[in-house]
Length: 633
Image (cartoon, rainbow, N blue to C red; front, side, top):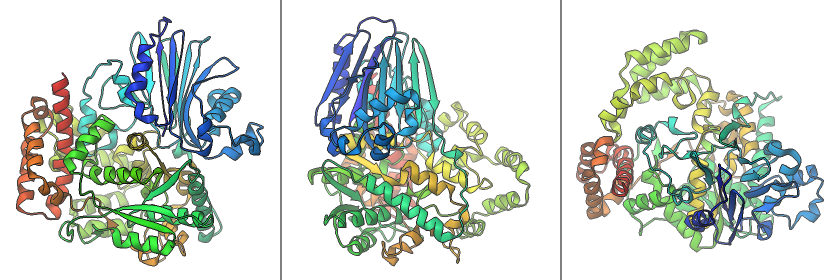
């Protein structure tokens, strides 16, 4: 994806050109096809360009409008035809009009309300010199990123936080953010980052700066979608497939080669199937990439999952007929190397530290193959392939896992009136000591106490970050999607920039999300209690039945333990670096991490592989971040 940046002197003094120049240089990799800067008076704006659509070769941002404002944008609009009609532009004459120019025209006509007219992945900034006003906006849920910083003297924003660090902004650790990453609690999604003074503009939000006043507003809420009532189930299937297919086809508009990540499941499998069908109409083939383990993973995955997704991915590719499948084994990239690179790309430790090696190797391979547009199905779990929330299935799941406390608790909720369930939930949380939840994490017990983390967690029970069993299915889906808060799009935008490509996801398309959230939950459960029934029905004839009807779940990085054992010296060096870091000992249960490593060296099994994800690699990435922070301080 292309990128944007800018800086405003709040006292009205002229911008020193060295500051926007430093920002441009710090995020230069966002612009493999060029970029421009604009400076005038107290403001400086810039853009960095990746040719992502046929029209993007004509992009020339920032651009001054006849209305007096200056706009910089990075965008891929998926509703160009409809937007051109609204803007009274002949679509045939729009072939050389880049998406950034369409945003500029939309802003000229509708101002801040233009956000409701734009579909796709986009972000933009408009500076009004006469009013000394800046307006920022991000798409509904696309793979874009936008960070900002403000102090008494200046306001700055950028697609990449490294551009803001180039200005010498303070580096203060956000302890709550770090704690949330370590315990895999999603309460840190939203405007905050791991830097106390650095903010993220979440998706579906705008920011208006006037003088020293900053107003952030949410302009779209997925939670406002109402349930749809159609005559029969087939109508839901037909409607879903029409919307989903349109979202995929819109994302095929690319300046260069397009590829897809393909697992063994329904999300990326359905994206691949729809892409392949659309490309076959043009006698084109599709390049797909599948991560495969190097080692036998039969002892690292439970009975309900599978660790080698290649057989299912091959079945999907063969069924389509025009898919060229490439296996990604990541032989030349270790988990530790990938975590270090991840810190460089994202600037903070991540929840999915154990997955970074195969993601980075896949993207590096696609880059070498000339792929500049990469499709994924990351958002499918709560949209296109939602399971349906069956009470019977929940009870069965708890019984299989022998979670007797959960069975009792769920039983109590089932017989309690809805209005009293929050009260009952609060009572249960006060009785149950939840600190044990985090013994399978790398968080230090002292940090839990210092932040009163248990109390905070209990107080958030029943909210999107802490969805409870008694809540309706829609809340469980919001808990996964995190509308208006998720930073998943930022991560993929940064990943794309690191490898000179744009990552697109049709499962997070606004139209797809609105349709799938409007479907009654019962439509996701089949006649025999099958889960994910809507997509299973929609994919008849598009996916092979062995994939379409499979009920086991793929497990990513299933051979993580063996890969860590492949480079013991590197692992020891990284662990020793964390153990020698004073800052790490304030936040991490370093001894717990060491114990997992010792256990892994004795036996690679399901339990140790799981702990390698939740304690060892997640803790190591956080520890390496803290070690670097300590050195810089």
